[in-house]
Length: 353
Image (cartoon, rainbow, N blue to C red; front, top):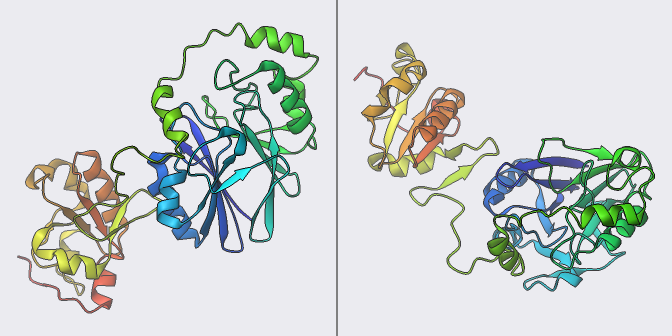
């Protein structure tokens, strides 16, 4: 089974990718991170069957609708949530299959009325959303939350799993990635040890927390499964056919660049001898060795697309990152570099000019 834990730094949200037999599901995708998730799915050769939200989030907008538009993936969420656009309204005991593996749905209300936990078929992993966080839990003071309900949910549906079962939350604000049933039974200060429902209720009703900053935006959007009210942003730049790699670098294929050569700036970041070696260089390219790029960026127009080139695409990928950080908004790396360009038989210059 393929398993990846992904992170959105803005909302401190974890997104989980599980794949098997070429199929995949994503748990708690984030709207702004959809291009990243699509890149990973493509690189791993996985077909996204469904997105599974653990609840209607109040601190970020789900990527469910956006992924559905791109992949045709089903949108799955608790039936209790009552959101529009849901293809698979989930109930306690439902099974979600991907390849030869499956997740079982456990209803764990209390943070919100529609919270779910997804348990892997062998009970080695569970994805708890905000119902149980690492040494904590989600608040219970809005979205039909209830401390009494959450206490029962956690103890009956999550901490009843095998002690070695790994627990993966929807958020962690300290960068901690995983815990276990045994750890939370013993060390969770709100729900572990000898804490009873009275202790827990008294604690939760006196938190007096401010509402999440994005609540007024996130909750209505998530009740539409993440569908925007206006125009949706495009996943890719429109100045050329580009592919986003999981590394975060946009790439352009040799044929795509050939069609754009007269419209883009080319920066070749190899060393001077390489510029005129057997691979040659692209017509109109400006030689700027990678070591000099930062101090020579003023030579290029930030409004015009720019493509970085090197021998194999490694140095130019680094150049693309540097250019993007410097404010160039239309940047791409030539996939495979001059090696690919030459193999595919496209024309090159070999003179120093």
